[in-house]
Image 1 (tube, rainbow over the protein chains, first blue to last red):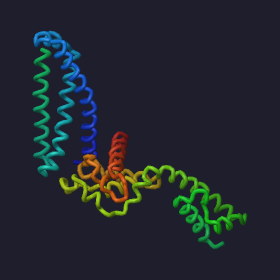
Image 2 (image 1 turned 180 degrees about the horizontal axis):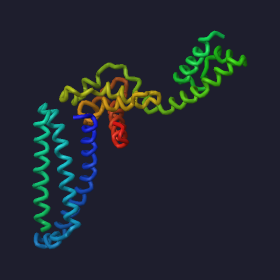
Image 3 (image 1 turned 120 degrees about the horizontal axis):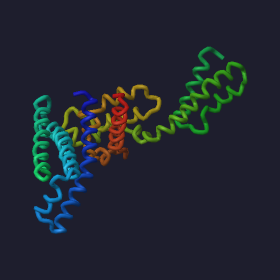
Image 4 (image 1 turned 45 degrees about the vertical axis):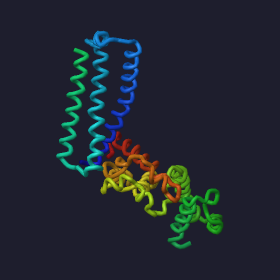
Length: 112
Length: 163
């Protein structure tokens, strides 16, 4: 992998981290609001189902996680396991796909 | 004046200003030579004037790396670094600090090549900002700050499409 590609991975990780910082704050405030207000599961679904804003927000959240986590894991693999090459990259792409699948499954569960 | 004399005075003037002899850009004996207003001397004086101005400018820009150039090459930072232990390809704080001092030098003509050499898994992006190098440096330098500077410089050059 070229120095430019490695630099782009670093940039993607930092950009997704900035996005995640915002998403996590909104997510935590939402959880605390729901708990404090004593909202039931049915009431929460009533607000999220068909709501495009929440769907868009949580989709961005999931995608940011799917970009951020595998790049961090890549460094862990290099430093702890000395794992390099195509097999490592394939495993990371598979992990990213797993995060997208699990995350979007949850997003669709509260949207649809 | 011989044919080599202008070059000699020119190099003295540039060296003097680069060495930070602010206010005394030329040694007294050299300045006396320039007081002689022969056409040749005037020509030399006109030639070195922009170079001295550039040298002064360089000195201002170099403040960012003034601390970095005090590295004595002891290697304590390299020994103290966790990433060096984990990643055998990692260049280490000393080399990256040196690259930073060169990249921030206005006169350096190989910035992109240097950035290409220090970017990526074996370079500045492997740094975890543990700051062990900065904590252990016997000269009180901050290689971590230089490595962060390299990350910013690489980011800029990638966004400009130079890398």
